[in-house]
Length: 162
Length: 384
Image 1 (cartoon, chains in turn green, orange):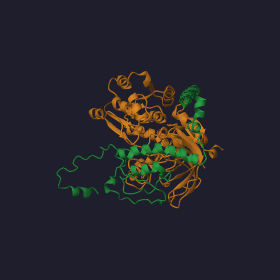
Image 2 (cartoon, rainbow over the protein chains, first blue to last red):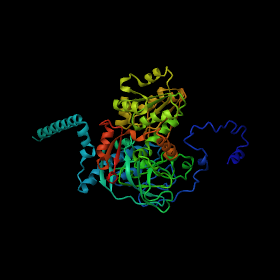
Image 3 (spheres, rainbow over the protein chains, first blue to last red):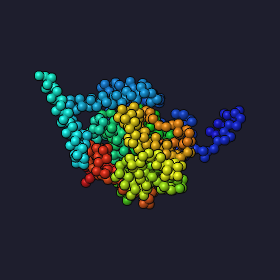
Image 4 (cartoon, one colour):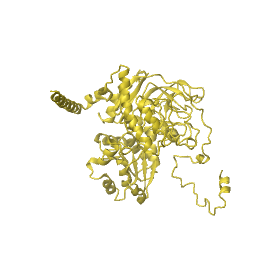
């Protein structure tokens, strides 16, 4: 490798004359062998069978040998995610739609719960048992504010309907 | 099986989900005996990480018993009790071959900037995580390591992320004997990084945070100085003053995008998501380190952009080093430090909570209730 490099660059006066292996800011995280200089040439692990939709970054040529199968894209959020993956990780067009899709996915999650006959206990999901146990004053304040806002809203609606 | 089920920002529950299956010859199925909630899980929990899909199971710090293995698994056998590094690494790609196991190129199709991580959104590969009774573990010949005889499982579970991450933060910082090390963040990683800094010969270790109970914990656990930035007029000026106006030799950002302390950063980074999290800790680290100093980042930020004083990085000649911890590379040394009594990981565990109560555990950790430092979740079978 080294010899072929030297061979390749022998017409460049001074090539690598100041190279210093100790000047390696990646030490000790990386056992430098410059493997990546060879490109995408390693013996790839066996490919996991692709039986779910896997979106992959357009900064790589393929799907990795293994991948997660949790929650494949679906619904409106899935459509947005597919569009987002047309853009690279270098692009806001990738990340901002993904954040939008995440928020839409929350609504889809509630709809899915209801379709399955499950009414999500949002208070329990937000850890309100712990809030009540360890932070009761704040919990009571939040409840009071919530009740007050609801009362105002109800009053306004009832006035309008009259 | 029981597993956490993300439902949206600040909403999580535990549901019955299908058992994981062997999907690749090198897979193992692990019955979880301990899993932690990591500070970085709070970024997911708060909806800060793009492509965090509803229905996912979180959890990247876990240990468990091997229940099943694929035909290609030769280094584990059914019944082994293993630590599973949070990074999913193939061991064959150009990056793994150079021990950059956190940067594997064969485990995350969705992004090239990070390797696969258990239970950490589709931006990190879309794997279900270990806050469950069972979990699929890919590349089982590479990452999982049998827990040594006599090691407490509570110690072992913290070797899958917290301890190696904190150690690597100190390692990347290139700490030399006598150096003053300033660590921003007194969460589990910051506290452990303070402890690890002494292993490299630090002369002085200072931790900065705003939660008094955590500062007190850091003082006691890591034998370091600890200061509340809310009681300092300006933490950077404080660091300068206390280092004879030179600045710290080394600053470690152990907070990431959740940082408090700067209203503008909080609003744009955490509330409006105009940045990839609030970069307050990194901002302070860059400005508090001395000229020619080193800033080591292990705090987690999102993949977009952050406002940091990059001009000062240039003008001060600062070296910035950062990475996800390479757990597999560091595990042998971490095991040695634990067995020799130099590190006591389980000393940071403050809450042992049944898996079924994960929603409360997340809230306790996120809202810093009940003096929480580090919560672990214990599945029903592991409580027997």
